[in-house]
Amino acid sequence: MENLTEAIEEGNIKKISLEKSVLSKTKNQGVTTCQSILYKVLQDEEIEPSDPDSEEVSRSSHLYIWVDEIWDEKLLRSLKCLKVFDIDCLYLDEIGSKNRRLVLNFLQSSFPTRIKDLSFWSSGKMDLERPNYLNSLTRLSSKVVREASFRDFSIGLPQLKRLVAAFRHVRTLVLRNCRLSILSVPDLSKALKNCQIQKIDLLGSGSLIKSDWENNFDEFENLVQGLAGSPDLRLSLEQVDVSNCGVTQNKAEQVFEENQLGGVNIIGGK
Image (cartoon, rainbow, N blue to C red; front, top):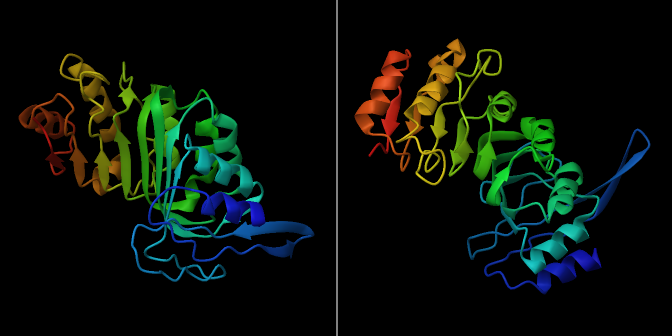
């Protein structure tokens, strides 16, 4: 544990609270597993982390990892087989191809057993599937219980189907500033079976430099029609954010109305 603690103490990120750094070994069917708890908490006051043996998640525990920062890179390298205890929110930012191995190792070996919110941010326009991130994310999706957020990724139709299928149980699905390539109407009826998504956040994904829905409005229509193909989503969906997406409020509402989603609250239309 010395190298992990040292990596944190050398870091220059403000307001870091390392509540506990615990290395515990438990034998489960002859396999030794390692667990560590690490919190980067935004609040100044000390916050007691949740019991690692409890199913409850601490209400104020956040772990931020800026993957391209040298100190956070040290942190990831130090974790190795250590598993982060259950926390509220996990933020992985500045994810790119150059740090692919570090991120994949973290997802495979150190991802918590349960978290409320996951934010997965690309360092630029990167295909979500190319570095095998999508495979890892779909495998661990059941551990995310409230919100799944993906930003600045390029997501094609096959990737979109897999993503919504994997995270259909969360309450909020965020696809912000993503390049969504929806050239045809996706069949999401099976992918969204038993869907519980209440809110979809598309902020910036339809902007000029992303999907450009102002000039490719048919792709926005394809997306809405695909979502509406799921009877379960039609029952669960309450709100869609189309801020900075190049579509007007009236046009967005009209498309949703035409696809049996007239009860959905559309916010952010220009």
